[in-house]
View 1: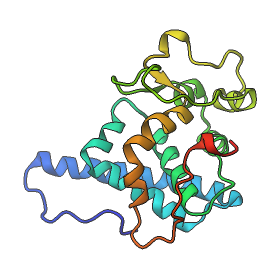
View 2: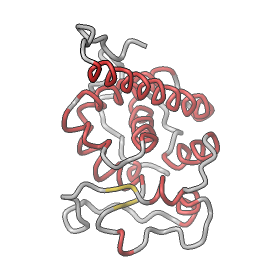
View 3: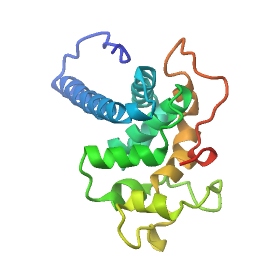
Length: 204
């Protein structure tokens, strides 16, 4: 609680009131999803501090112009999973791998279209394979988790320039856009000075 400041004044117009209602609904949904994930990931070491950082990260993204652009054409759950992973890397949840986040998310929310949610995450228009840093190929076991075990789970070639899997999205887009936001999300945190946030730098 306390990660989103109350508005300074009560909006007077119907349009403003409608926006406030939508924002509250969005925040309640984001908070609920993150809390469910945190509860499921507690067995891997995700604690209260990590949940607080994840929620604060989402609030900061929503209130900052550049990070807020990440919401365009993407599912809220995709950004929640990224925020949870980054928060866990900073708050001691070293056993919370991205694959475990995906696995628990799929189980909790009964995901049937893993291809759409975990594999084909839209990239910004200015992203391309030639300009993006290379990321390690996802092994077969990881691909099975990403696609729900379906055969041929890799993104189709024609989608390569416009989408990527969620781990690549985290490495190529989320971190580049939100690194400062994630690091500064919770004031006074005892997070480590180092920045071990890339899934490519740890066992996934």
